[in-house]
Length: 272
Image (cartoon, rainbow, N blue to C red; front, side, top):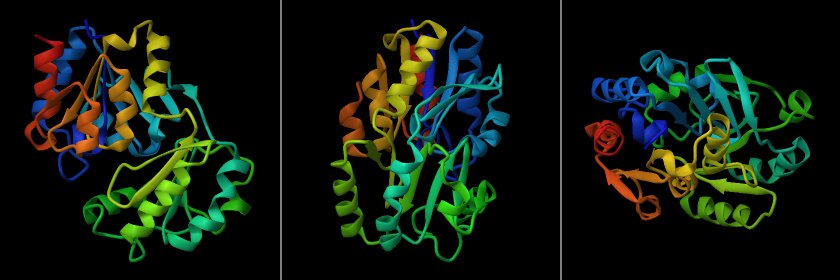
């Protein structure tokens, strides 16, 4: 019996605009919740950029954000799971990152901080412009990371590298570091959390919180940052639009995000 459904947002639950939950997916989620199944969104985004999704799907119980660095309980209004990077560790990588990336964000306490708004300096080919505008609303601009944020724990560091070769080299280099977990959620992004902080670990945290086992979890995703939770969940499901590595990490494949793949999986595995 499935007790928890955890869904990635971009490329999974959401339509191509990165903003809209289809009526088909909303209807399936309502039915699942009425059947007593807990619902969670599992995103690489910050907590502050998930409000519109929860307005569309008010049944959502938990928000797993920043790639699993934290989990928020919407009923109590509290964060009950945290696994963050110490400031000293996160900031030590900034000098090298600044040499290769024109847009860097630090996720702290559920919000994104950058040294400028996404605009002309942002690689527009990665994310639709309509979503970039929305994304910019959730970013707090600080003139200098170290002067403004020093000492605070960091949920996630994310940056974009336009040169594909440099992006791959950077990803591989950081992946060899012992204190961080490196992944990517879209195009030429490189992002890292504390070692051990990923969507899989956060799913286990939710299971402990609600008294469920990982075998009773359905997890759906489409990208590399979803792989840890697909491997942990008893029902790890990749979208048809997922990359091949993510598909190979899943037990099942559902329809594309543009074809209500989340709803299809719910009806097949959770409500059959």
